[in-house]
Length: 625
Image 1 (cartoon, helix red, strand yellow):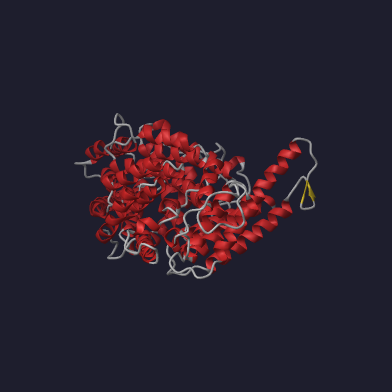
Image 2 (tube, helix red, strand yellow; image 1 turned 60 degrees about the vertical axis):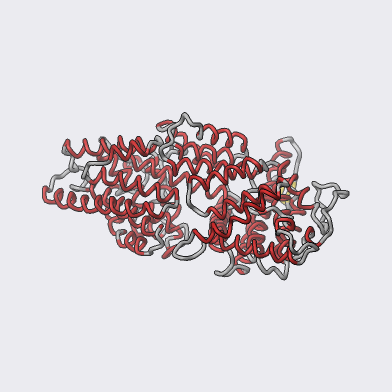
């Protein structure tokens, strides 16, 4: 057996109790529980507390404490590994394997800590540790992941042997698990740690590298997601962290990829993980956050707002300030998407009172909310505070990417005001498209909200072409003074982009395509150089959304007994999907050609394109394209 001395089992159970406090939103009790103990389990707990505070709150100062505790834990596990090897006890697993798992946890978290401090040494340290991953994976999962359940469907996980890492480990098969290879499930807390920890730690870093296609790991994502699902289905501490990683990933895909090949499946997986963890820790802010995200992504924004507001009530435990900040952050964005500008502005300002990251960004959005409300006096106060806030916040002496964009936008407004009939007035008077409305908040809203945006943007001078199906042709325009006219390619392209997205959300496919095409082709853009790339991406999403929408219409007619032909195929549209997937891929290529390393927020577009390409590939597999 592994090193199962009563003392070690007791330490593991004690540390688990500390993590229970952490997952229940009581980081003060968790830290108190971990403190004063020198074993690797409790030192790991202290390191995790500091790491989560630093990572969730973007608090660089806390990285020092996280590094200290994690290094002590890593050193302690190495001593335990040597001691277990010297004893040479036998059993189901090699002696000291549980300490190997905890050592890997410490190494990976140290790597992430250094990465958050913008050091590549952390990545290199984790890659160098990958020999451990191969050894432990083959030891714990000699037949791959077959037979191990995941939280989503309650069915065994089936592996594919198509990835670099899958070939390296020899871990996977394409066939279903044979009766003789069903998983042997853990029979104690240490065995549980070994199984869950191997599935989690062995694939977490591989998964994160795959998101950026780093060093050829791009195609390992499916195997890594499967392994994380196996870990999330277990009961020890690793299962909670695996669930958190998967929740974060599913939430990002739903928000950022624009289109999902099987959205219902993603939401089912997401919900199953949240249900499992929230049942154990109903007061944990991270699980409340993800419950709200599921509601928002399922078009129940009002339900999401209620969930977040309930989670922020004073009677709930609130010692984990960084986790609570995420609830405020999510609430602010959800309110903004619902055009509840006053409440959204209050929440964005509140973020600056409880978090130190980029106050300039939150002031910029809040100022935009007041522009949308018509309160330009308050908007002016917030705009005037932004330069000083940006100067205070640097990363390695550099402005944050969003703050670079904001500084350019403020200069753009000043230049526009100087061209106006009142050149000495404050630039807030010349803003026509609210800075609150230029973010990725328009895809998962109701048709009524999309059409409210369409009416506002279409009313700006000069008039729009084509005429929106959502807006009467007699809609009044804004004053035609240069200060109140969209008189630059940047502004016209931005309006076209926003109108394209809003019309797509409202289901007006042809009008959306016309506006997005305008934004993509618009010449002379000088400041908002990110627009053509984003327009190309949104056009790719449009091709997929339109095909999906027309397929749904066809199915509804077929269910009603109406014989329908789609692109020459009776009651089917495989060929339509083939064309849509090809068009979408070509548009993504075009979007990337319009973007360079100096384009604002180019890395964000890179990530979105990568995610959408994954969805296109999956849809191709589904339809046999």
